[in-house]
Amino acid sequence: MIPEKRLKEIKKKLDPTPAEVLEISTELLSFRNKYGVSRKRKAEFTPPTPQEVEKYAQSIDFKVDGEYFVDYYTARGWEYKAGQKMKCWKGAVRTWKKNHNKRNGHTVMDRNWGERSLTDVLSK
Image (cartoon, rainbow, N blue to C red):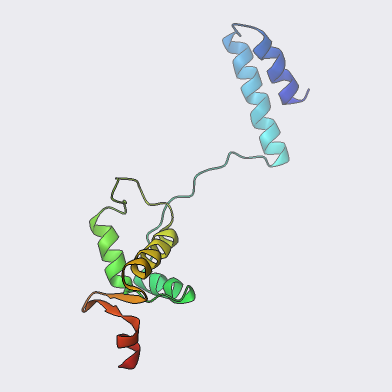
């Protein structure tokens, strides 16, 4: 019997017995194993290396000190201001780019010099 049909049958009952619950659980598990259907698991967040941050920032035409970025979020437990756990560090890099472009036009965020205009950096 197909597990979905069996599940509907059991759900029709208001109070399935523990044996029926165990039976349908076993059927669903064997169905998942047989057809390769698995539960989706949330990907665990892995903090980037400074080199990964710099490489990604460069790919989106943004210059950021990778060590500064990693140190900034490491000090905050890889959480945003509102206490939300970070899920995607690339999104944070894009947000940094957007915010810096809003504030100062094209800027570079650097640990040693703070924010400087992009033309100042490129002219040296």
